[in-house]
Image (tube, rainbow, N blue to C red; front, side, top):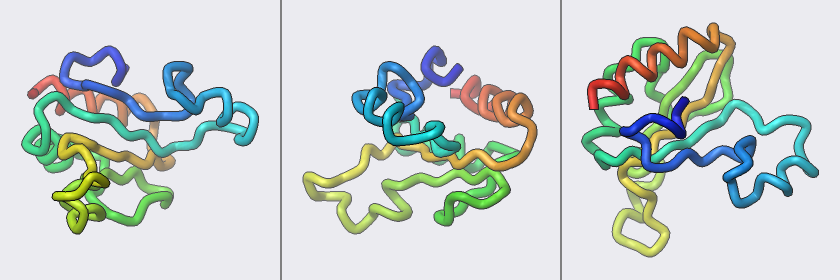
Length: 116
């Protein structure tokens, strides 16, 4: 649903055929995993709103636990390279999907994205 949402500019996930390393991921991985990144058209303001308004995702830099987490790499983990060629798009949102019901997580994200 993310790739089709009008607020989303790009989805970065090796499980999508549109990902540049899709074929490599198919050869090297049993599955693409639960880490999904997407870039919002609204930039950092939109990313902050999504992180703040989701109810089932916890804002955290530590990804990969059993709970679903959300991170904004530009102001959090990559703030030190904000003015360099290595800068992260300020509209980038990274989520790590936990063990919650998948449809509940989708509904939570849809609800917030529809506010943009």
